[in-house]
Image 1 (tube, rainbow, N blue to C red):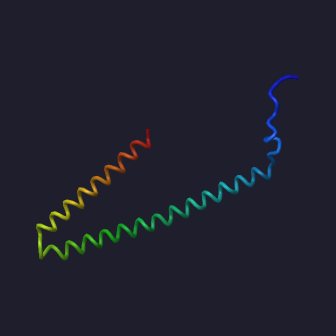
Image 2: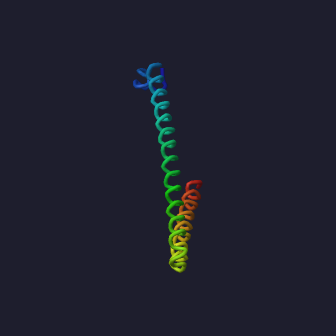
Image 3: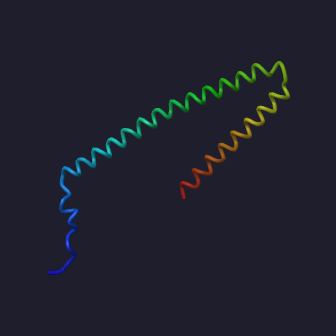
Length: 96
């Protein structure tokens, strides 16, 4: 007699819908893996370019102007420290 009436939308939900949903999840996982893989290559490229630029500055400026080289290194270290603390803060806030 009593009881809640069944949801008409759930009555139309079939096994085919479940398989289609699982296929979409698999495709999303595949796309996420491809995105992470390409992202790693870009990060590696940026790191290599940054190190090459830094080495070029050191090799070029060391014999010419050591004070300028020292100031540039101080700015790079300050920027890297700020960047690292920003990532650390974000990771800490994401844990909460």
